[in-house]
Length: 133
Image (cartoon, rainbow, N blue to C red; front, side, top):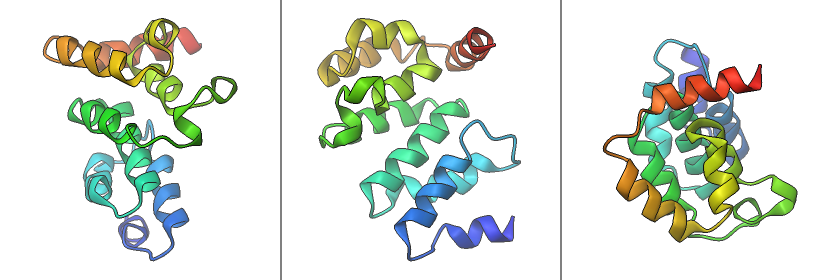
């Protein structure tokens, strides 16, 4: 755990990003606690990795924060042959959302604003895990 905590403040962005991505779907005790400082990281890419990992752990507030971060267009916010943050997010929220909304940020934001209160993130994650089997 000490090594993971040390990586939180590593001056190299790639190290912090790798830590955040490595905690995705993690069974590591306290993984969400480790990720939370990275939600405010100076690097957009680190923040996005941390937020996506938090979503994978069932942390609902991270969905809205991640969607807000997607307002800054980068290679991973476009279609890019289906490899993008919207598709990654749909792995936890339900792939049908990506099939319906693709990379249309406003559609995602509108949907999440209306669905967030009643959305069962743990059930959606479990369904997607089952679907991948």
